[in-house]
Image (tube, rainbow, N blue to C red; front, side, top):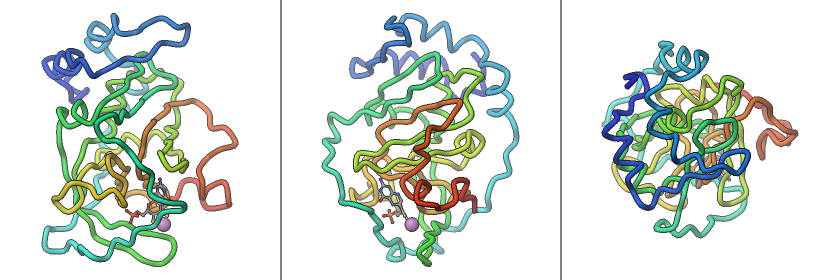
Length: 236
Ligand SMILES: Nc1nc2c(c(=O)[nH]1)N[C@H]1C(S)=C(S)[C@@H](COP(=O)(O)O)O[C@H]1N2
Ligand SMILES: [Mo]
């Protein structure tokens, strides 16, 4: 088992054993479930392995007493989508060896982490928020990206979409969050799962994420705001 996967063999067996986990079909319609255990005990391709191991500079975090509980303004381009959290699945697919479809229980059974960071909206406000959830890199590692992957494309239940470079996607402080300030994530803030990262502007922090597609090229659709002229990289 490669320790850099942040996923022990036991954990993996736990996930695979969950009846709710359904692995999607591979490119040629072949079920990929069979290969899952064996595949993860083999090294990731070199690119990903080096990216996952590469020490990426962590952004300094804030302390608990600096949280600004009322400063995060709900900012939703349309309206809050209705999501049945019991039936909810997060799909991770694209140029990967093992596309997966995970329930919230599957995700909560993986390692939990939390971070206190500043959310910055281009509309001129900011808020220090604590987010709790799972590191996105951990989910990406489960899907086993191919060496071609350069971007992650995020789709949301309200029709919102965005895309990130792979280094920012794999940054150790980039989370898919299901908690805000120590409480379950409120629906208006993106429950059951939203992006939260100290290295990107607010409009890159997709709420209600349903699908993460790992890809070598971006289509003409780069993001809801990005396609209207907002900067694509949008780093902080
Ligand atoms: N799905 C989705 N995600 C989204 C948005 C949205 O409209 N839909 N708005 C973005 C913008 S511009 C900001 S500033 C943050 C706001 O997050 P909040 O509503 O939790 O404060 O969500 C981002 N993520
Ligand atoms: Mo924003």
